[in-house]
Amino acid sequence: MPDVVIAPSILSADFARLGEETRAMELAGADWIHLDVMDGHFVPNITFGPGVVAALRPHTRLPLDVHLMITPVDPYIGAFADAGADVITVHAEAGPHLHRSLQTIRARGKKAGVSLNPATHESALQYVLDDIDLVLVMSVNPGFGGQTFIPSQLDKIRAIREMIGRRDIRLQVDGGVTPETAAAIVDAGADALVAGSAAFRGGGSQYAANVAALRAAA
Ligand code: DX5
Ligand code: ZN
Image 1 (cartoon, protein in one colour):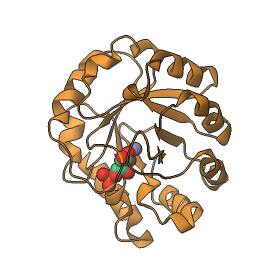
Image 2 (image 1 turned 90 degrees about the vertical axis):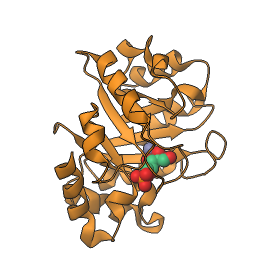
Image 3 (image 1 turned 90 degrees about the horizontal axis):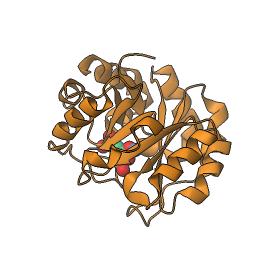
Image 4 (image 1 turned 60 degrees about the horizontal axis):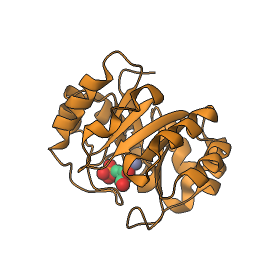
């Protein structure tokens, strides 16, 4: 894996052509494919469920990085694991049993991630640091692509990098990541970048340039 993982979010892809879009992003040089699952309850938008993840699985060899913005989350972890997710990230705010959710993900042999909304303090991670493979800092309020990066999250990224210490945990940032914001985000300690609009803008002919611009900025 590269020093900084680039994970395009198919939230910004053409939903009528998700298989092709995913293959195009692999050819464009993406490292992971990020899948934003929204339930219209935890976040004010609805996207797709495990059926779509399973349908995309044969279209790419890249790791499928599934970001669950749903509550309750525990009843669905098994379905996303069966669908072929490689990384399953749940929100610390999604329920009272974060530790159990993480154990469930790892018991299925998947990498476990925790996401924090912009207003959530990094201390939410303190007692699960040995149970996770990834932290996802939301740098916009989750629900929609194309929002502006919230600068206060840079301090949180720095604090989490410190907390991670020598553990083998990826620090991922999601929301408003562009070639303009990527350098500050990586400087603060991130080593995985999710990009929706910045990855998919301009259509298929631009994907390789978009991924390269993110990588160069990081
Ligand atoms: C937002 C999603 C993000 C989103 C990012 O709720 O979790 O993954 O796709 O989109 P951009 O990069 O356009 O901010
Ligand atoms: Zn996401």
